[in-house]
Length: 415
Image (cartoon, rainbow, N blue to C red):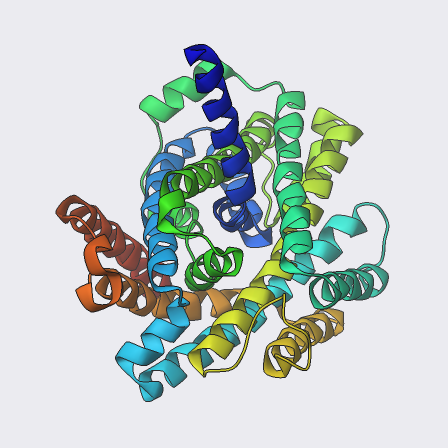
């Protein structure tokens, strides 16, 4: 009898977790966008297995930040943008979110560049692939609802695990990988420091904080479900790091040992063909396509969410167009601008990517400091404010992230 009740309790908990599953895994997986995959690919090609250790602090920081976001969304029932406007005022909010909007248009353009580059490996022109993908994701969001969209996003998250296949086909040296994680051997110079900053810095972006909090609210989660929400976050962060690990392994096991230099993820996919076979190359390229289409959907969606929240407009996938016109027009406008920029011949994509990262880097400290101040405000959070240990870890993590972001921005000035 006791065994039967225990088994029933286990299955009930599993069912509850599956119902809650989504925000943490989706937010974590979006980390592995076109820019992230490029960073991991270049790191593996340049430094072999020696930078894999950076994924450990990345994993810890990601969990800490996302947990705070989720807890704040559950307790307040408000998005991060709403809370910033209410506590910092409209003027400060305006300048923060105008900057984020500009950066996210650039980031969305980069994601469409990933779509174009990945399908060019399959001989599909960007003038065909980008408009079709743009229309497809627009219809999914505008004509769908949150539950349908979330299920599609979860499929995208699982599909990113195909990088495991690509890495295994490169026949990695596991003993060397283990040794490199514990005792990395590399010269510390400007380029290697830049790469370390890039790997850890790609873990967290300002727009992710707003999306995480909004998705928790959209799903209607409560504090009584906290342990399942935390598990969702941990699994999402773990999946993110696992995908990043295998991307680095795939490039280290093939490109690095053959001294092949790459500049972007598309180059990695093409270079894998003669080294690990056509299938490995195609799997890598398809992974880039999935990651790019995933992020090209989520990023403008997150931007529309937090900009509308910041200025008091209705927002949400479950709302109809006439209920949230500003939200849908903004979402549509970001996608259209991203597509137009990509389709311009000889568009300065590298400059767009660079400046969007610089703006993100400048705004990240502001967003994170706002976030940790809000999560410690008893008027907002009640008894669910951070514990002392959470504050210590949180402030240290934020200080590290801010330092890395500032270093990444300032380092080119001293070359």
